[in-house]
Length: 119
Image: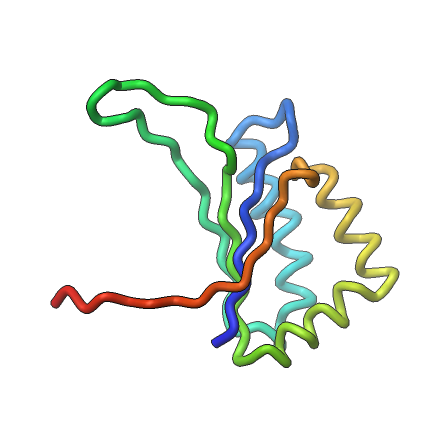
C-alpha cells in the first residue's frame, strides 16, 4: 500500500462541530467522487484533545484532523493527482478548502508503517 496522510486545521472562527459537519457533508463528498475507483481507502480522523493526565492542562491543538488516503501503489497516487490537478477539479477543491481549512497549515506526508505484534 501507498499511504498519504494530511494534518489539517480548521479555518479560524469555525467550531469543531461546524468543521466536522462541513467536512463530512460537503468536502469529503468531493474526495469520494474523484477518488472512487482510484484509492483503496479514504479516512478522516477527528482529533479530540485530552487534558494532560497529571496537570489537567490543555491547549488548542495544532491540528483538528488527520486525513488518510490509501492506494495500491505509487501509481494510484499519481493517478489521483492527475485528476486533482486538472484545472476544473483543482479550482473546485481549493475553493472548498477555503471554506474549511486553514490552508497555510496543511501538511502532507507519505507514510511508512511498522507494526508491533502485541498478541
